[in-house]
Length: 351
Ligand SMILES: Cc1ncc(C[n+]2csc(CCOP(=O)(O)OP(=O)(O)O)c2C)c(N)n1
Ligand code: SF4
Ligand SMILES: [Mg+2]
Image: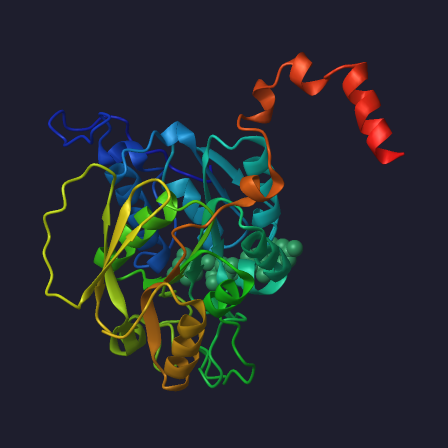
């Protein structure tokens, strides 16, 4: 048995959301990850975000690759569609599913090994194509599942548990996503639920490729002195550019901030991202400035978190390809086979 189902019974007075689900309804099986693993905190944040957004669990498709991080979807959204792909191949399977059925909400979950090594090509193309999805990397700087080898995101000069120094330059998936045209790019920390939950909510509401890199310490293989992915290191070097509040359409805006410290971004579906600026001069709508900011602060040893870039007018792969408005399996014979006159017209246009 590879997983333990949670008992379905729960206290009758548990709070429900607008569509009548409790938070428990968004959970999955009992986690078998190591106690204290950052990935479990990210799963909890995904549960909270879907509960807050009143999402029907069966409207979500969660896809992952291979790794402890890619096992995590077993531990949330037990009532959703799920597909555990081959190592590094989640993005292409997700792209195919999204093209076939545009009515689902796509959530890709991956690891730094899964996305920055074997799957880096797949990662890159899903970003540049603008696949309508939320892509979360649970980034611990190691291959946790295969016992702690450095991954491609491990910082130059950081030390492994055995004391070996990493001499390779790191791949920064956030910098890559920005360069490749992703239209919602954020970084967060598994230990900062208050920052992470609204970032996930904003990503789920975003139309286009939304990427969130979440630093997620591996307590078993990468939580020691000399690591730049340990709980202590990330807490000490976390440099948040903003804090976001996510407001669903129609929700009354009651919070109030001092002038000059707040930026409001209305997304395609009417949802509003309220960015409380911690760096007064940080502009999350400027892609080039975001890339410069990242590089500058990385050189200073800081981990920049927050919503780094958003294009509220983004469009997705369906718009680029001018696909039909409905899932492909709802097309009837007439739509799929428009007849000899239509075929003749196509042939004539090619002569
Ligand atoms: C094709 C293939 N190559 C190698 C492996 C071995 N393997 C399993 S998980 C993994 C790395 C996982 O690292 P990451 O994505 O960072 O996940 P984590 O366990 O750290 O969450 C590797 C190399 C595999 N399963 N399949
Ligand atoms: S080995 Fe590391 S990444 Fe895997 S479950 Fe344990 S703490 Fe998490
Ligand atoms: Mg990893």
